[in-house]
Length: 172
Image (cartoon, one colour):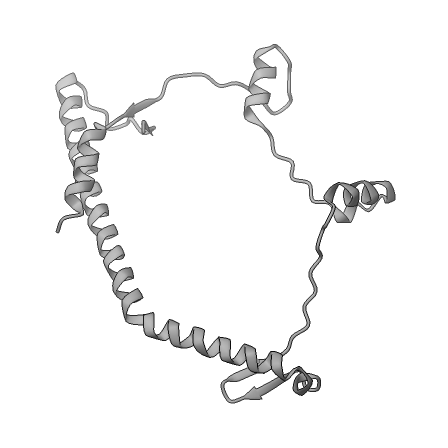
């Protein structure tokens, strides 16, 4: 990845100073990559520990959910009024839900368009910079749009050094 930098007020005055500055910058990028890799390893270890520590809870919850579902579905008539049974810990029972199922999207679209039901459509309009750029470069004038050209300063730390830092960072 080529990292763009903009503030050149503290720019070095000689090529040697620039090389020293870049080498220090690269070393800090590599050190940060090591720290990031160490952090990711810790996170992975914590997630694995958490999964192991909570596995019994999850199995217990899954088993009890299945049993409660079977009870509710086997005794639907007990949950007509009230639909839910309240306890000190919450409630359980039946809940009516509605969901729109679009079985033939093309037929639905045609019918809704014919009826003029604009509220049944979602339209997202975004400017496409590639298309705008092509038109501007072809000579068209588009208010509020220009193609701005120029140089940017940047740097790139060797990928092999970053990769090595990632691998080393994973070993504490």
